[in-house]
Length: 299
Image (tube, rainbow, N blue to C red):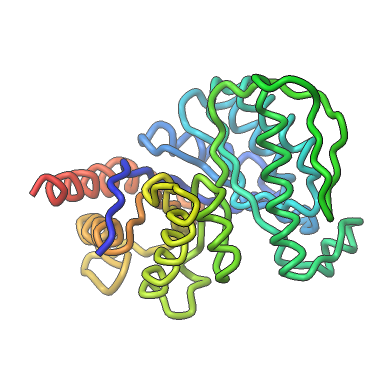
């Protein structure tokens, strides 16, 4: 049982269809009105049926006033890290500190290459990600003097001027599953963002993955609780409980509280395009789950 004690956060993960460009924007407004914390957009720049994620996040931020925005996850091979850092800081300033960074190494190397990006092996993608994180944090660090100098195997930044300073310290989360990527999360990242549907063993896989992150964190003197554990999930509302996140809102709340208690998950991002589901999650599921977790922690 692992509860890292962080506050619970709830978000949505809609489909950014170009055929209905306002749908996700309207859903973000619904999510904000329902009290949710985050809206995140998948980033597949090689899919013409999807809107560009960065443009989409900027438009959503302009249409909302409280909810935070993030990629889920941003495709690093097609977004150079120094430029991405400036874009992130700019959106964070324009949105009064509502942008969070979530990165991925790119899961489709052939189509990334077809778009003009680099075709990397998983190991190369991991090393490139580590270099990118260093570059982005250096670009945001305007308290240091001089330019940014990072000479890596995949990215070289030699004298780039720092800034602008983000409106708040931007956290960097990474979608990761393999041991060396989990090690990177523990050593360097602010958050971990897997998808439940990608875990071949289901929720029990989270135990071993958490342990790998925790071990990497402690090896460099970090507290494991400093790394927020997010999870992309899906579910179905129905009258009777029928398994994990299948049933009435009350059973969803119990399931989510159990994921916090047993696996340390405190950031739940729901894949849905249904405004009614978003409203139910925000007004019924999230408050009930917070109450259950608070009561269990108090006892």
